[in-house]
Length: 409
Ligand code: LCS
Image (cartoon, rainbow, N blue to C red; front, side, top):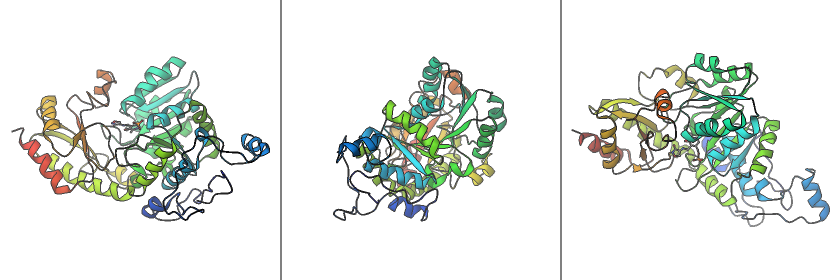
């Protein structure tokens, strides 16, 4: 990280392109030995504010003439290092880290939508993203159509002359329905709207939404990017600097900025992103196979299983099927509860993308706030179980899930 004088902002080395292959980029992006002591690991600038050497310098920073730091809600070198790293991984030019994934989502909606505007969103987005639109943004006269964006014709038909944003999560949480990003971008741009993609489930290792025309890519970094189930955070990534500045102004005043220590933790997590994502994905492939062949299982959804109806799209858009599996047991909700209680390795907890495997029941947990009929319409059946596969030993995971399924009799 090149630092230009006290409080100077780091320079972006990788404008719109990565210098290295992605595994190397994870380890080195946004990190350079510090110029003072040569520490390999970046320093944590745990400060709320930055000292100006002269009144003129302070005035120049507020006027935007001097790019140095002012106050951590508006920017901080430790947060900037993470932003630089994730921007490069997503092939963006800049990023804005936020206090949580929901802070990223609410900030972007607040920045892009005004009274009378309309949003089209995937019906099976993460529950709170949907509730935020339907319960909260509706109070300001912003309409939302929650549709099956994995069907391009349904998506096209939902767009009106007031549509300003198309917001998709692909694969969706937890139905794993896949939306064609190139088509969604085309539909958004024809309507004069922006395509915002929640790329949390794939991470930049497995999907690069900007390549398909996305305007903003966001993450709950709580998941894969941090990867250790110990930090909540979010990030927004841009290729258009004007758009970034519009959203940045809103982040600064809404106040959902990330904390420096949080940023440092996430940046450390990013270093092992590629290897974690691949290990979890290999484990998930094996568990999906087990589920697909087990007599107690009614159905299993996993983008990597043979014969997937969207196999062509998956091959075009995703570098791999990821590590989320959803399934339903023949014994329905009751059997699901038994499995949730009898697996030893996957912890019974919401969230995903950590090294630990987690299992949960969306209808009563992550999507409990979504109305029952809306949940069913979105494909989140009452018996659906979501398994977020981690990085434990594959044979241990297989043996554990097998004993839980076999015990159903
Ligand atoms: N986007 C997706 C796809 C998510 O899965 C989540 C959280 C968020 C955004 C929100 O991020 P946060 O504010 O929590 O950092 N997903 C959760 C889940 O599936 N279980 O618990 C949280």
